[in-house]
Length: 308
Image 1 (cartoon, rainbow, N blue to C red):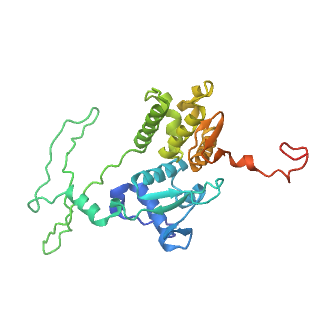
Image 2: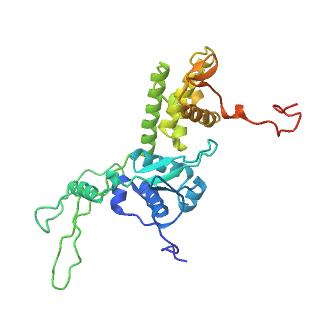
Image 3: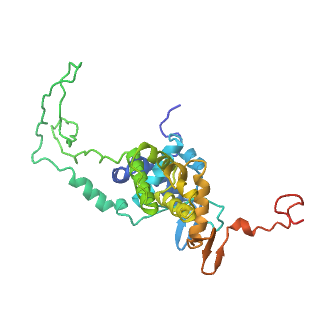
């Protein structure tokens, strides 16, 4: 059976891929499909938001691994063309909702086309021969390499009238930042924030960046990692024992980070209260976590926390 469009294809605008990258263009076009062509999601303040789980996204992009999917959405968010927020009121519901920033210059057809054109200009004359320069072959090679212009003319096929038209030049797609380089740059931002907040001097090294890069690779943002730093610093900095754990290896370890982030978000929502005598204090009293207000009246007798 032919692989040529057996089902609805994913259509990509070449100018969009030029502007933000191929993988990013594929993902953003699919988000646009859900926003414009369906009634999925919800509307908030005149803006439509849609959501899919990672598993549902991967069903639409079966050619990607989960790490590639997360890196792609992380980059779209860092470029400012995709907005990702958790809109549910429940703190336990961590569902991500997505919408597109249609005002981004990276999506402006006129500006992108102008940028593309500025990188490639037509030659002054028609049918000028391509410049060929002989260079020394690489070791083990018996062929002579040819260095050609980065921007070549596409000529129409010669007809019986011997007419030749010069079409628009084909330009190479602008190189996009490597995914690993982007993750490392973001990890350095988090490490710098950690040093500033805790007055530490952790160096840029494999040991310091390993867990940070891993969490960013999983789709967590620089803002979320920085929030965990702020929260744990507020909680542990005055404790001589716990302050020793204000380090990258502990804050961002895979088994602990999700719990730290959940607590950090609750802390931020409460206004980032200071820690006083082992309690989160604020102007209107003591901030207590939601689980401390749990109604245990319906818990069977004998269980921890139940009324006797």
